[in-house]
Length: 128
Image (cartoon, rainbow, N blue to C red):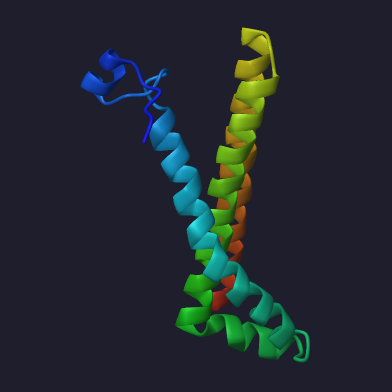
């Protein structure tokens, strides 16, 4: 197997930027985690389509459903943040624009994820 890493990067165990491998692994872990969660999420939507409001609240109040729905939301926002970060880093030029967009990406993903998980937990724990 051919390696394209320099001797110095092999000695340090880092890529060219010093953190690329961890970002790549993070993206793959998020994607792999989303596969079963998305299949479960599609099944949940199909199941909930035939029920009413009270039935949906009861369904979400089940601990497993509440936890899986929260995980689906949290990991989706985490994965979206990582993907958008890569796009911005690759295609936005100019340090100020890049920094501003990366901060906006972080704030939108954290705020969206926190609001989504909070809403799911509020319904699941009976505060709706």
